[in-house]
Structure formats: C-alpha cells, structure tokens
Figure: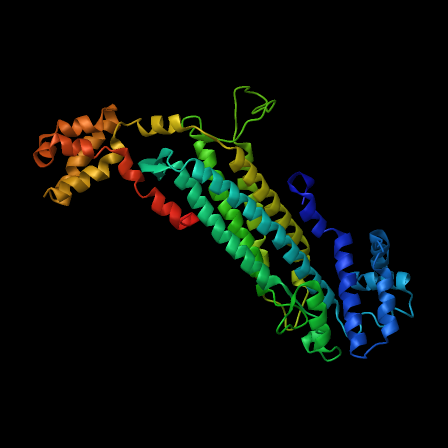
Length: 435
C-alpha cells in the first residue's frame, strides 16, 4: 500500500522485519516444546534463543533466497548464521514451511484486527457524541433522493453508530476465527512432530491450535476475515455518501471541515469539495477488491497448493492498511463535521408543508374516507405544491372535499413537527442503552 493511505502502526505489522521476527519466535518456541518432550537436546533449544535480540538482515535473507528460491529456507539459513549450524540443526524439526507461514500470517491478521477494533471503537465514540449533540436537530428524511418525512440529524448519526457497532462485533468475531495456528507438519498429520509442540507454540503466540489442518490452515477462515473487512468498508462508504450528498451546494446541511489555507479547486477559488469522503468511497472499493480473491483461496488442491500465497501477500497488507487509514479518516471527518440546522429547516420548507402528506392521508381515512379517495384528495393538492410552490396546508383548507371530512383545527394539527420526533428517545435508548 502506498504511504499516502498508510498509518505506521499497521504498516509495521506487515514489514519484513516483523514477519521474520514472528518466524523466529515460532521456530524458537517449537524448539522449546521439543526439548521439553525430549525430542531435541535442551542446549540446542537454548542456543536458538541467542538470536532473540538479533535484527534479522532482510537484504541477506533476500540474497540467500535468490539462490534457494525458497523464503523459509533462506530465513533458516540466515538464522543458522547467527546461532551456529551445529546448534541450529534441530530448528524446524518435523515442520513444514506452511507451519511457519500460516501461523505467522494469522498472528499478523490478529494484530491487524486489534488495531481495526480500536479504530472502530474510536469511530463509535465520535458518532455517539455527534448523535447526542444533534438528537433533536430536525432535517428532512429522503427516499429515492426525494423529500419524504422529517427525521433528525441525531437519528442519522445513531443509525450509523448502530451499523458500526455491528461491524465491531463482526470484527471481534473475525479476529477470534482467524486466531489459530498450525504446527502439524507435512499434510497436517503430526507424523513427524508431536501435537503438543503446536499447543505450546500457539499458547506462546496468543493463538489456539487449528483443530484440523492439512498442510495449510483452512482458508475459509481467511475468507470470513476479509469479507468482514469488506462489509466494514461498505459501511464507511454508506456514511461517506450521506455526507457527500449533504455537502452538495443546493443541500448544504452538513459539510467536511475546511481548514485554513485549504484549496478546493485549482481553477475555481470558491470551491469547497467533499474530498475526504470521496476518497473514502474510493478506499472502500479497494478494500472490497480483496474479498473475492480471499473467497477464491478457499478451494485448494488436495492437502495444499500455493495458489493462495501470492494473493495473501498482497491482500493481507493492502486491505488492512487501507481499512485502518479509512476508519481513522472517517473518524476525523465525523469529529469535525460542520452541521447547518437552518439549512435543514429551509430545505424542508422548499415545498411548504408537503412532507406532512401521510398524516393528512391517515386522518382522512380515520374520518371515514376510503383510502383510494383520501389518497386522490391529498395527491391532487400535493401536486399543486409541486407545480406552483404553494402552501400545502392552505391548499387543503381550500379543498371542500377535505374540509368536509376534517375541520380547520384538525388540519392544522397535522402540521405539528413534533409529531415526527416523539419517539427519538425510544430509538436512542435502543441504540445507546437507557442511559
């Protein structure tokens, strides 16, 4: 992933230095377990730990791999250069490369998940704060992009909070599912290594043993992990698109913060473009692009092939780094987002009273008018407002069919804005709890 869309903590998880450090810990812990079982001499296991403070030379490992054409063998050769070839002769005893590669990948994914969980918690805090701030800030709800009925800005933030709270649960579940390790040897039968070695290594690395591996950890786990990242990315885009629509000049109910010295356009100095949320829409596409390859990795030949390997070397870093950046960016957008309540009321009144049409329809049916006739009565007056920008209430009061069923006070009562916000507290209690 390019530096422009990267944050250092997530990038560090995927660095070669981190990867080789995890490989080393897998091998060293495996040696400890084998020494405990009497499979290898204790002094050999202890010798491996001489490299615990070594900064593994990535360039040297790459140099060896250029000859061996095998990354794990290149690493083991380099490790022996530090430990000593005689002392390191029991390293990787009974193991296969996938034991190291797959266990390492899952360590990296669990660490990435921890950062993403923290990101989601930060975003939730920002969404909750803005929801509480604008709990009763009335704005028009829209369906098909058209004015529907009144809602509040607080409810908009609250529904995004609820969506991201579900994503937090999904991310925690995905972390739990991916946190497995395998030290089971070729084709996963433990023929040349004791299952207790796997148990020890996993315990030391914060994983649980994979119940049954082949020569690889089953890739349905990884598919579920990346699918979760894709869902979270889609939720980011959902919020981003709402903000982009709110910032449109003819709407302007909300906007990204525009900092001092910021420029919106190289050609038009007046422009304030929603560049951050547009960027989030693009980043969401890139995270979702990892989902289908992860799904396709599930189907491998027999006990293993490596068709998944090149895919994961790319989507592991790219998807997690991108999503980490996107969540942090969205949190910043929400935290500093500008809200314009006056514009919300002005927009709602562009077609005066029209958004109360359903209340009038229901009142007519309750007064004894058939639904078909009531709909026709309301619609014909609503269309006058659409066409001539007249006042809906005044049109209703001038319609003898309407006034035959509803008196003026009953019509007037149907234009009470508070009617539409009377259950906001109930919804907030469902989303945020009674407190």
